Length: 139
Length: 144
Image (tube, rainbow over all chains, first blue to last red; front, side, top):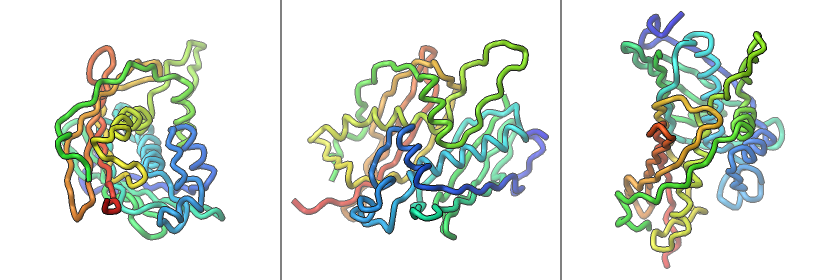
């Protein structure tokens, strides 16, 4: 399979991730973003949030993982050239059991050597990234 | 309220820093990204590609001087990340030496809240390698 065989509207992949507090702590260390609303329930509630929330960039990072894992199989000759997200709603991460993040991608545009994906990202039935888009271009 | 006279201004370009292999590996593993396969012919593995969202860990610190600037009026405790976009012009791998130039692209004010859009050019020895756009929502502060 290659990028040239993809058509607009086609569903290309879906992925599901469990996000736990320990994942956010690891991401805070690796990224340097140690804002306590991502780590500490009291700090999150003091900021008016229902509970600890995931870093938007952590959720976007999970989406990049889903895109790269799909592309490694489906379009190994392609390179990610654009990637965007709008953080519409927070991913709320309770201490017990964490949160589920669901990712679904469709082809939005297929032109020449590049394909743009429209990616739907939900958690708890709410769209958390709306929209997210990724463009892959064949080298 | 942010100081609108800053629109169009660029901060001084940051000193070049090396993207260490260790920081790339830690970032990739924190997201559960697969480790690259080891070469089977005994040759040394090439440096690992920088994960797609890694650059935020360079570009946001590059904008910190805006927080420290009392004339700009940015209170980080009232900031939410609203939008993020990356354009990758070339592949960056661990070991790349890069610097960041942050430009204040726009400030839009709606009902006392500000939307601050920053564009950061990430350059290496060969020139512009990536561009990173970040839009921050800055909630209205207490009337002073």
